[in-house]
Length: 290
Image 1: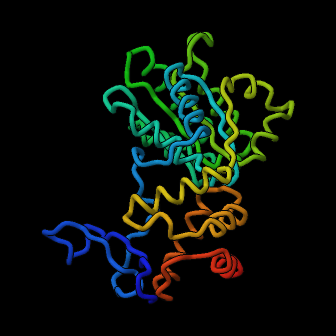
Image 2: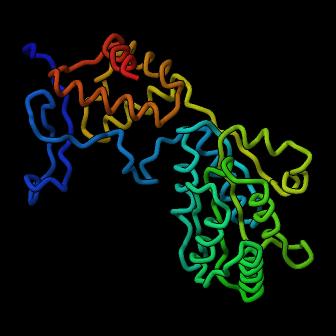
Image 3: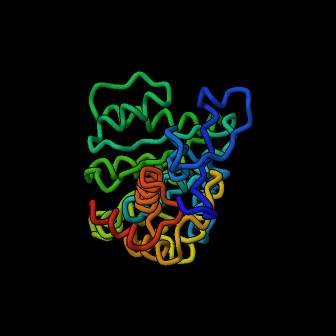
């Protein structure tokens, strides 16, 4: 390594046995054989999220849906931060007032209903139609008895069949349609937004009081995001050159998950190659691996 040049540093994880009983410290990536804490990993608390305009708008929409027990639709490309943005709001809801249910990663409606029923403490009915009715009755009873407010988040909603989307719509009816027994937020990729414009979803579309389309970060936000994640982990924020940051934005189109994946790989390669700065050519080489 060139003398006088700052080497890449990272902070050891406090879970590392060698760190037990001592303060965490900076470590040279190039010279150490230790695994490094990944600044771009998933284990980021809601309080440490990168704050930008779209996130704040999304959070405001979710809080409004929760307070009004309304239906909302949030769409965006994969990796744009939909689930992370929702979680930043639901994590702050007091557990003695709210029951938050997250459903996702399942295309089969009956499976979703079974999981929803289980989260409510119900012994699920065998047949889907009976199960949906059972859940609706429970929601109405819970509303009338002043139970915890139910917040249902349905992820990957673009994968659901038409019947399941209709079941969720019917669950929002209560007291002659004067109240909703739950807040329901649908998350999905852009095709869901287009699909719901069809006339067969007119009833559901009318109930979607709030809608938000999440896009990727812009160039400046991408740069700020990367530098924040680096500095919060004890890595020099100038690790990536300006042309490298621009290249990351171009390759990842501002999508946080893609940025995270590319930057994580860059750090790993930088450690192996004992590099202290990363330029656009270095990033291009990594992008060619896709």
